Length: 118
Length: 412
Image (tube, rainbow over all chains, first blue to last red):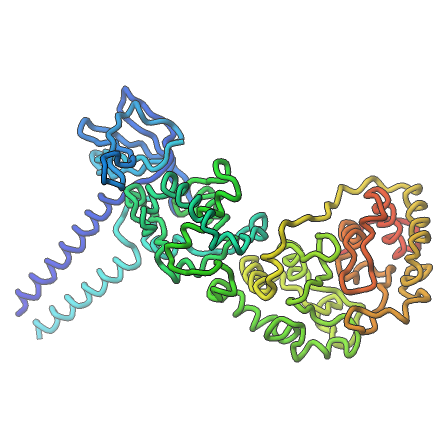
């Protein structure tokens, strides 16, 4: 009885902790592009959270995707499709949303989605 | 015994973890908040610069406007808000603060038209939305007013509501103000805002002033021309500062002989909510084509010459007929004055600017001269006085409280 209960508690604790960690990693960071360093492959975003504005540096890896959404042009399709971009296409002032992972003290982009081009 | 102890500890641990989970959600680097899906779109009152922008009623159902709105929406909004208005556009899905679902009838019904216009115009660049991390761009620089109205009209179609999006179609949009009104205003202004509350007549029995009838077109304290409805800022000023009175037993306890108390202690957001409710009682606020206000220019320096010119204007405009030679409200016409309800009304005692109903500061007196007090014998002098002359008269009126010697600022 005691053993079974201990196992249940252990599962619950592990589940909660891992769910929390997963939630933290998958949450997007949205903000305005403040600076782009193509040589260092980094983006600096100005973000606001809970009333505080801060700069977040996003590291881009070779497998990081950058996309914007455009209207489908194929006949019969009406929605949006992803259009791949490179870091050189990004411009300061654009609003982007980044799904990133925390690796080695850095925010490493998995995908950068352009929300608004200015 | 031991099993019980372990069970108790396990339950306690689970409760503790659940509590921690609720109080401190998992650490996130995201700039959204966990309650964004609802709270992030809190429908706070629009600021004063937007509060009077009410969308013309015909816009909401005009097929041409809806078609224009659809075109703009498809190119500018759908990427976040979704083609179906469900807030699930591909870019919107990527945002920490999700766009609202325009198909949500209740959520749309709570949005007042001026709030909606403010949101489309300023986007997430203003508080409280900026602080919540809203990525909504401001469209005021790219879309004309009519284009923004058109987009709103199209967005409104997603909710399934057929008529114009106005407060009397959606009473829930003024529910907060209605509750405040029920607690703070109904006694004097009445259930329907007609100025017929139970306490009202006791304030000054069979005499003016009586509580304002919000359903009529006559509002005394305005920055708008004679015969026009006031601005939201005018209403806020009256609610905040209250209305002075010449005194009387029913004003004892209302600081400074106020016949209407000051609600300056009430949070501004709540004052604006109750004003939105008051406006909802009068469709005229939605039917006026535009708002003109009487600008109050900066006062010129006071000089004895100005005072002398003001004295002459006081005589020429026959102010003394009601207010008396020395401004004590005892002119020959004073006993015969009546308001538009045919109730006797006293001429203001100009020697007591602290009791002027529309305020006793120089700018208040200027505004009163140029707008008049609708529904009372006090006319507007906007057509007969140049701004400079009005200031001369203001200086003279304010000098009456000090025996005509000076014209320093009065107090509210």
